[in-house]
Structures are given as C-alpha cells and as structure tokens.
Length: 449
Image (cartoon, rainbow, N blue to C red):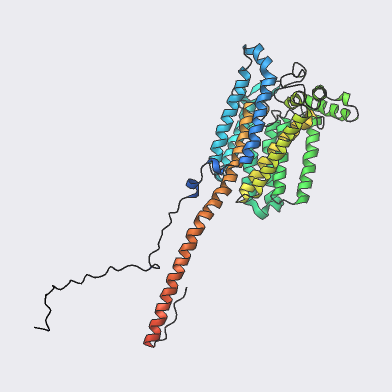
C-alpha cells in the first residue's frame, strides 16, 4: 500500500510532435517576381530630357505659327486662329503617334523594314502619277495633306538601320556593302528628285551616307562614293535639273563676294535679322512676314524668330536643337543593340540636318533649299513624321530602361535561388560523405557543392 500512489491518474496519450522543416528545406520568404514593365509606369520609362526639349520646341512653334498666320488666316477664313488650330491638330496627331511608337518595342520595325520601304516607294510613284501639281511640282497627295517625300526620309533611316545592322563585316565589301547600299539609296533619291524635291533628296543621301559611315564602312569607299554623288548632283543641277535650281546656285555664288547679289529670299531674311537685333521687336510685331518673306510660316520661320525674338530667341532655338542632338546621340550610345544604336543615331542626324539646312539658308550659308524647320514650321506631314522619329527615340530609351529594370529585379531573386541550391547541394554532399565514412565505402563525392 505504501508503494502505490494515493490517486491513480489515467495515462496521458503521447501526441507526436509536428515535424517542422529546416530553414534550408523551406525558404522563409518567397519573393514575388514582378515584371519590370508593371513596376514602372509608362511615363517613368520615357526620357524626360528629350521630352522637355521637344516640348519647348513645339511651344515655340505654336507661337510662331500663330504670329505668321493670323493675318493670312483672318483674310482667308475670317478668323485669326483657323490656320493656327490646324497646326494644333497636326501637333495632336504627332503626339499620339509619338506615344504609340514609344509604347511599341522598336525592334519590331527591323522585321517590317522591307515592307515599309516598299510601301514608301509605292507612295513616291503614286505622287508622280496622281499627285497635286503645285508650281510645276508633284509632292503631295490627298489635297496636299500627305507628302511621301517626308515619309521617305523617315523610312530610309529605319531601313538603313535594319540593313546595316544585319550586314556586320560585309559593309566593307564592295559587292555586299557599297553597291547594294548605293542602289537602295539611289532608288529612293531619284524618285524624290523626279517630283522635284532637291532638299529632301539631298537629306536622304546625306543621312544614309552618315549612317553607312557609323556602321563601319570603309573610308575610301565613302570618299569615292561621295565624290561620285557630288559630280552627278552638279551635272544634274546644271543640265537636266529645274530652272530655279540653277538660278539659286548662281545667286549664292555671287553672294559670297557681295551679299546684295543673294537670292531675294535670303536678302529679306537678312533684313529680318537686322530688324530684330539682340532682343527682337516683340512677338507678333515683325514686319517682314507681311508680303516680304516668302512662306514665313514654313521655310522662313527662323527669320521671323530672329526678327521678333531677336538674336537671343534665335540662339535659344539653336541651343535646343544642340541639346536634342546631344541627347539623341546619348540614347544611341546606350542602346541595347546595334539596330537601336543606328536607328537612334540616324533619327538624330536626320532631325539635326533638317534644322541645319533651314537655319543655314536663312543665314546665307547655303543656297535656298525649301527645307522646313523641325517642330516649328507649319505643316502636317513634316511635323507628324518628325514626331514619329521622336517616338522611336523614346522607344529605344525605354528598351534600355526596361532591360535594366528587369536585370535589377531578377538579380536578387536569382542570387537567392543560387545560394539556396548551393546550400542544398552542399548539405547533400556532406550527407553522402558522412554516410560513406561510416560505412567504410569509397564512393565519389557529389559534384556541384
């Protein structure tokens, strides 16, 4: 009795303890991999510097278009803002196209480059047959609302970027590089010259030639090709070219020694700059745009800027173009592939060359060409096409940003996964080694730990 307990307790059932996984077998936290496109909004992936420069140029353009067209608009339509609103509409279309092209991966245009080129060549042929005949030239379709020559400038940049990036070392070959390049550019340039549109054809040839150089072409071949093009161009202008072209060249040569012998267009532009002085006569107060300057809303708009905003206003515009060129070349240098680099460089050079031609004409540095001032001159096709080029630049920048975001997002996850696998493999290796040591066997150690 003394050995027995006073109170008998029922036996306590033994519940098995829950088996918990070790930290190495189950990660504490499984990160959710979020695509970079979702983590960063569309606007956050755009190049803010480029958009600011283009936005300021567009704002200046709207001001100058209104200043150069309010009188003409009132006399023609009874409202001072009718033509101005047309430019606002053109800018709206251009902004939409730029946004769409920025949203689309630019690398898709590499696959569609041949189709785009064929469509452009078809439109160039169509304008020669069905185009509107204005001043003995056929440059526009659909009542002047579409100029295939403007599209040809954009198309040649896209196609050259695609073609040159695929040639690689063959660019230095005469058979596979220089000859095909010359044939492709010549087809487009000749169709544009047939309109005739000398400035557009020259822009196409020069931009394509610079892209050919940037792609790594042989310098001797470029020199020989440039000489041949120059000789053919001079012979064409002096023999079969339009009559006005020869007159412009003669007046330009005469103006080198005597500025009073320059073309009347150039002389009126010089007068506008003289009137403007340093600070200008004031927005809308210029006089040269009334019946003196030809096409003050397009070709001569930089002279109007010089008169109304002065040397400071003209310098601001030039500085904005320089900033655009610098940013465009930076985008080209940082591109993720050769196609993007050539495309960005080509777009930048194209816009810069158009601006340079217009400014050089207004300052009597080259013969009159009829080139418009990008983002500023009035026009539907010219503005929309240039904005499409800006959209492609933004898309190339987005490609680099998104790729960098994807790498930064994937790097921590990949690093954790690699460490986890490495730990597991090391543990597995230690288990096998210890088992082998206990059993006395001489198995080979597991690899990968």
